[in-house]
Image (cartoon, rainbow, N blue to C red):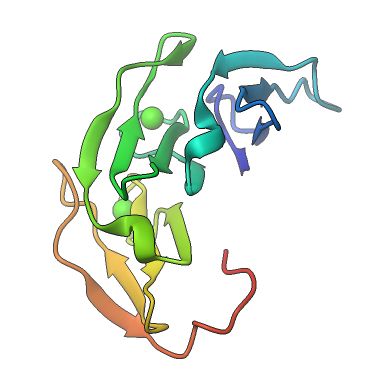
Length: 145
Ligand SMILES: [Ca+2]
Ligand SMILES: [Ca+2]
């Protein structure tokens, strides 16, 4: 995932390795620095996204766990804080994305449901509002980003 985790205006890279470690590769100006482990146990997640959900300029991490819960891990200090559940029933979504679709500085969530509908869940300041269908026919896409 590419997102500005440090808040310096340049995108960093986050990844989940085969053992479930969440690794952060800081952008140092010309390349990537050595990775820092900022979490573990991420191997069971169906979806993992990095986007600024809180609106403080630093990317947070969102994940859909094995039970279909959509969890927000806020970026606090140098790492991630305790997760907050911001949705349920996401387990059947083949694609889930977090990005500031509305342009208010806070990431919204978009998902492709099992029927191929592209749904937009606006960030309302406290959490996610009811979804708006903004497209259909996305079920056959291998990647949606
Ligand atoms: Ca943030
Ligand atoms: Ca937004």
